[in-house]
Image: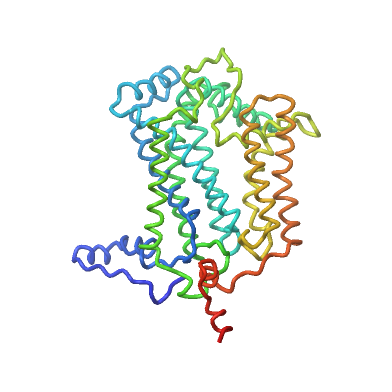
Length: 428
């Protein structure tokens, strides 16, 4: 997507001209994120969350590198090394809280980013590869977050690793071998900490590489927009800089304010108090729960309570992984020609129900496994899969979407009380 107004990078200083000839990184950045990159003119603040996710990843990498200098990946000293960071390392408390709460902020931003993609149909052609790479990033984030949660070696860290890896043993024939391979033994111990620490350190850099591919894939078809209508010409776009750099700056400011409030005023709000107790293999916590961002998937895992052909435990594992793998097939499950839910009122209603369904799964995942909560989890799990496998294809075939605007410009002008070119022509 390139238009005549888009400025070309022309370095004026001799040093920048030399660098542009030898290694044109400034040109690449300018054409990707500067005045040389045209963007739909009607993007709203939900498009800020891609930039916020990148910022959160940078925060995690920077704080993680410093924390790794002081952490001991050994079951005898891991818990003590975390306390050493909190008490003795200069600004260690800040780095630890920034890293722990940064994971929550990162996942929160990504969940909103995914929700925006679902609402505005950003997974549809020609952006299937952008969506698929995004799901890969999500899986890498979840793996990284799980391994990071084990490292403090508190009670919830130890027993979370014990319970979650224990579900792999439900896989026939190879399950127990996979579990032993993951843990490096028959139970979480030194080998587990070493493996998880190594992978937890490595995977963020792998994630950063996939994010580069994600952005590259996005620049080929260009950004989606709230109308879902393709760009028709110059009048539908504006330069990324300064218009969206300024808009992203507002989003970054709000993000940092919320992040700072979490770190300085309520740093343990999203954590579990049992993780301030050193891991004890002989003392099982009364109620084992993962971090909040895993709770919907944990609820799906626990929803299968009866054997049917195969063991209930295996059904739970398959459903948990299937709930994420479904997202890979979303571009082909939804074959509606209309992207944005702004013009799909029937599907918008079901999407809102899905949002409340995921919130219900989150509640059930963190609640005690009473009979009532188990039934709620089973109903919510059934709806989750029904939404993607039954409701979505049916709505795509049966609904009557609202008329789409002829162009992005027409939608913007009509929204703000202006007159579109088509309306002007009709008036004359």
